[in-house]
Amino acid sequence: MTNDPIIATAPRLIIRRWQRVDYQTMDRWPPFTEPLSSIWNLPDRVTIGGDWMNDIRRTYAIVLRDNTLVGRITLRNIDSASGSARLGITIGAPYVSQGYGTEGLAAFLQAFFSTLGFQTMVLDVASVNERAVRCYRRLGFQYNGHHWRDAGWRFMQTLDQATRERIAPFIKEGRHGVWVQFYDMTLARSDWQAAQHRSVIHVNQ
Image (tube, rainbow, N blue to C red):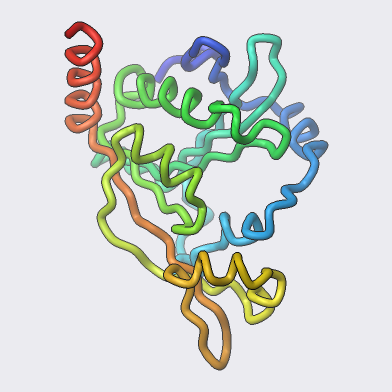
């Protein structure tokens, strides 16, 4: 594991180790105004009560070249034996829809599978978070299942009719609550390397 604070670079971005001051900057980001944003990071209640105190995490900042913080990458559930970790990524509301998530994660994957020495990255993402799902698929993540999370019985009351109809395939409503579908996705080092190879061949043709 390298001690260099800079983990990876991209044309517009730097991925560096998280600093204490970054928490203060992140707290100043304005909240998301999209009606579905409240369910993007619903807790997985199946894992609540597990061995969370021993869950080793690593956190990294996504910053512009002038050190403006635009996002955060977190690795959790790190398994040294298998070389796997679970991804969490957040892009601040002022910086979404500008390609920072895809650019930053693509750069981070280079380090993840090389200098950081991992073999597999796993993640879960709300199926209705179409922007994030597109990003992960572009980077080579494969769908390998799904699960459901409780969004609370008030959730659907916050949505207009058009939004309800659009997300209906990804929602289950019952007498005691509303559940949102989450995709489980995986990217293995071998698949990532193959995708990089195909990309180079395509560019050079």
